[in-house]
Every structure is written in structure tokens, then in C-alpha cells.
Length: 287
Image (tube, rainbow, N blue to C red; front, side, top):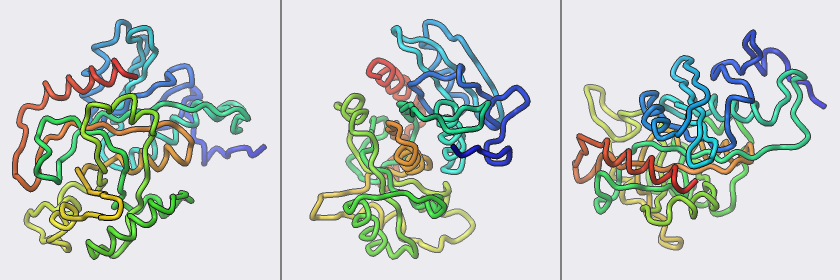
């Protein structure tokens, strides 16, 4: 059995994982992730009972009970790098013996659901809509450091996106959980979510600094693989990493979104609280 070193598996003095400051007993088998730390309470206020709370950096965790189900909600902050930290440390909590520093022989599979926000690429997707991602498309370089196995279809779509957008790299394309897609998203818009490594130029926004790819938003919007009828529906900053680590660690993962803006129609939802609360309630009821 491989023993993980103190610099690979970093623990706090109380034995908790380094960034999240959690022990195995603190998390449920069903986990909701939110980007905004302020959204944790927006989820946990629906709990009949909250048994545990932890605040560490941007990672806020509440664990409690909803309709007889034990659920954890945790904030990830923004970006795929934060998602790497959260998914890796959550997996360590259930699949590594932290005292022995050894992977467990019997593995546990978590259900991890992201409740987030994003901007629509297609003009027929209205702000305030609920969208669930069948695939995540990563424009970041995080998976260059991991041996992520992709299907023939996923590799083909990634290469096709590179060719049709003239990007200098091949995006990675990863499918989420079929189980959670069907259970949670049967009445949501089913889409394919682009994950960008930044908020401004990587998402086609123009500020004082010129973008190297001024047609990126247009290219992503009009991308269409005709043989599989594959479109790109929305853009945000975490889904591809969630799906990649779900596959690498063998967890069930899915990403749901409130559409805050329609990028090409130039529509923006200034007050999104009602749409977000509706999505939160929908996910909690269906988990």
C-alpha cells in the first residue's frame, strides 16, 4: 500500500484536510457545491437541522438534514483551480485513511451537484432559465497535469472545437453523470457548458486590454458539430474541472446553472434571487 507523504497529503494539526479544514465525519455522501460563499446559507437555510459549520478561506461548509437526507453544501470560490482543491480533498475525506495516510481498499462514491450561474451563448436561452450540463468543455490547461481518459466522441468534439475556433490548444470535453442528469434535469434545458479560465477575455469580454481572440464568443456561439448535433450552450468557470475530477476519482457529478445573462442578445438578469432559490429547491427535492 502506498503511503502518502506529509507534503502530498497535507493535514492540519487536528487531522483535518488542509484547505477545507474538514474531517471525514463532517461531510455527507451527497454534496452541493456553490461558487459564492454567500450562497451556502441560501442552501442550508432549507435544512431542518444543521449539524456542522466550518469557515476556512473561501471554503464554507454546512452539513445538515433535508427531508431525512444528510447533505453537505460547500463553497468552492471561482475557477477550475479551486475546484481541483475541493474535489481532491473531498475524495481524500472518504477514500483515504487520514491517520495511516493510505488509500482505502474499499472506495466510496460521492454524489456532487454544482449549483451555479452562467451566461448563455444561444439566443433562445432566456436569463432566469435553469440549465443542466451534459458535457463540460474545458478551455483551461488543468487537465494537462492529469491522465484523464476521454472517449472517442469526447476527443473528436474537442479537436473539432479547436479547428473551428482556431484556438491554439485542444479543449477537453467530459461528460457528467447520466444518473444525476436524469434525476435532476428532466425539466431543465440540457446543454454543453464551456468552462473558461477567466472572466473577461477568456469569455469574450472587452475591457481596456484587447483580446487576442476577438471572435471567440462568436466562434463558440456558432460552433455546431452536425453529425452529433452538438452545440455549446453556456459559459462559466468550474464545470469542466468538476466533470474531469468526477471521472478521475469515480464520483457522480453534475452541474446545474441559473442563466444570468444572454451574451449575444445582451440581456442580463439583475435580480436572480428568485431563479436561484427555485433551482436550489428543485435540486434539494430531487437528490
